[in-house]
Image 1 (cartoon, helix red, strand yellow):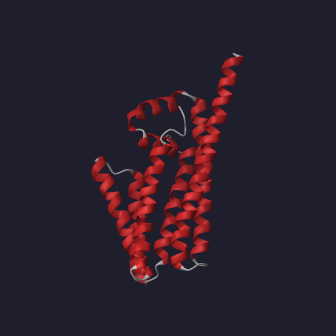
Image 2 (spheres, helix red, strand yellow):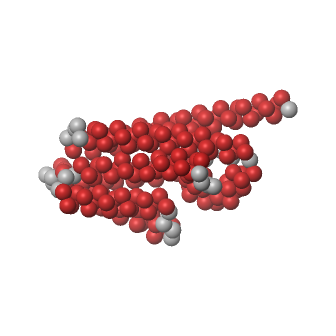
Image 3 (cartoon, helix red, strand yellow):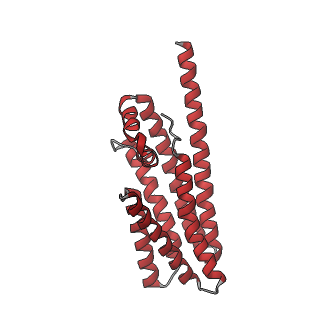
Amino acid sequence: MRLDSGMGAMVRSMAADLGLPLITFYGLHALSADDTTALLAGTVAAGVRIVWVAVRSRALSPFAMVMGAVFGVGLLFTLLTGDPRFLLIKHSAVAAVIGVLFLVTAFRGTKPLTLSAQQSFMPAKAEELAAAYASSADVRRGHRVASVVWGGGLLAEAVLRVVLVFLLPVDVMVGLSTGLTVVTFGLLIAWNGRYVARRERAAGSALVAA
């Protein structure tokens, strides 16, 4: 089973998740709203989208729960301190949490996060994907490698964003933060595609030899 199956659905979902708060922030900024107000509005818009997706699908995924919790913490700290940078750091918190989950489930869990993500974007094939993972050591090894790469990439992104948040102005960092996410996921998705293609070529060569 291809590890990059469902990538198109993931990219479309990410575009909406990233685009909505970005448009909200810069739209309100153009109307002379301050950084804190514009960021709060963008965060609320992102939260409303999470609720809408959960209601539409009639299910609340673990990822949505993590996102909701981090958004809530970011809102709380921003309201208590008045510092809008907490609403930017929340993106690093999300990336770090997901990165750690990738690494932990790769070696400690019975179901890697790569498999859970694949199943969430391909619900019709969820059982088939689980069966392939359970029956094939090669599939399990592929998920483990992918989990390590994705986990490491997301943790690196999280650290870099925190550093930049305290070095750059908020209005610059809002767009740069989104750009950093796009670049990180773009590189990871490109690597994922090359990795899967390389594994498929190796499997094809083995079949020919046999």
